[in-house]
Length: 178
View 1 (cartoon, helix red, strand yellow):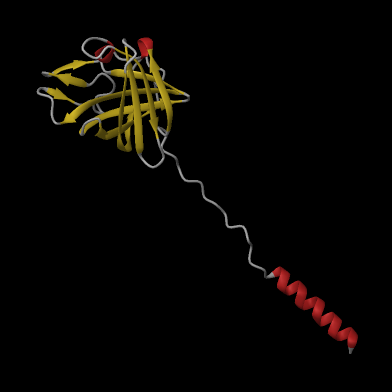
View 2 (view 1 turned 90 degrees about the horizontal axis):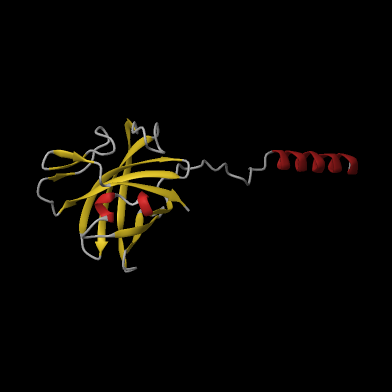
């Protein structure tokens, strides 16, 4: 009888161990927005439209966070820093970067809307593409609207910002991931 009870106890133990629920739940990785990082644009990577008067920007450090907030610090030629903060929304387009001089050539173009909160409330609309540690980025203020200015589009590609109906590539920024 003792042998039968011992055998029954062993069988019960094996059944209990064999049926034990797995403690480790498989984790499905979530796709991270490729813009989430700290990016630096300086020197000739700062677009001509920002390097020249009245802005005279020499360096931009842009930090995009996973919670969709951002902080951009612009340094001008007098070493004065201006910090811009807000939130972004992004989505991938079906278009790819075709600019021959771009370090992101062949990469998917993403749409971006930046809702700036400080130092003043504005909305800017644009596009970006990322390949490795390089990002091409073009964005322009859309609200309040700038007279005669239209934001770049993924279909138009980089250099599709228009002013009075003419395309200008002076707002294309090049960033390097830090």
